[in-house]
Amino acid sequence: MPRFALTVIRHGETRLNKEKIIQGQGVDAPLSETGFQQAAAAGQFLSNVQFTHAFSSDLTRTKQTMHGILEKSRFCKDMAVKYDSRLRERMYGVAEGKPLSELRAMAKAAGEECPMFTPPGGETVEQVKMRGKDFFDFICQLILGKAGQRDSVMPAVPDSSLESSLAEVFPVGKHGSLGTNPKGGTPGLAASILVVSHGAYMRSLFGYFLSDLRCSLPGARDKFELSSITPNTGISVFIIDCEEARQPSIQCVCMNLQEHLNGVTEKQR
Image (tube, rainbow, N blue to C red; front, side, top):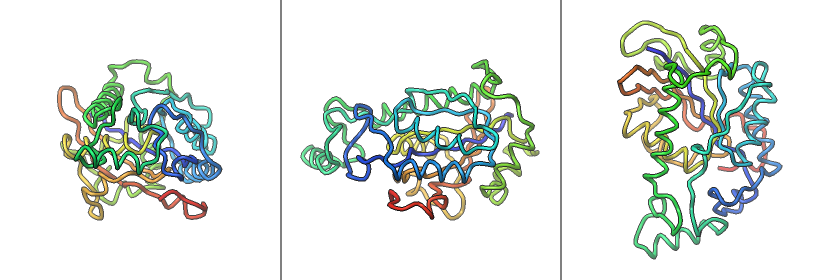
């Protein structure tokens, strides 16, 4: 049963994040100065972690964040990044480029709650979830060897190195995350995957992990945290066991980690 680590990070702050303007897919804003600082801080925090694959949304703010992370890495500075449109932010239709307050007003006028409301021309929550599921299924098949070209992304790294580099930064051994698997034994990691995406998209993906795949949470976390918007460059780590023709098993190691931002001013909270 292959086991891999999935590290998911939200992009750094943009000026529109700070001004609470809806970006979605149609407003492709770059990182602000603070956003670049956040990406560099996340990269420094992760500099000793060995990743085997890197995936990013193809929007500017995520590309810049991924670059800021990898350029600080001891091992992955020259890694090829796969840009995937399935990792894009939720599309908000007519609400893109408008203040968040207008989206909330539109939802209220329609008698709906804002997170579930679909503006005209926007994606439904279910559509975003299906994009996330499609990407996650692709990742699992990649690890199972069905997507091919796995080793073209980065030369193979010994399993023990992947584990130990994660354990230097994250509490991977404190909640049984790497110590056991559903069938017993300590299989090590077949891969360690880095993903940079967006707030609403990540909320939908994590909701899928929790509701559909019954992701287990560390003792200090609760379901509400999985459903909240990740702060800019917030880091979440999952350990996934995947097996052919069976539902993956997911354990959350940490959620929305922000300690790398302690020295960054004007943090997005």
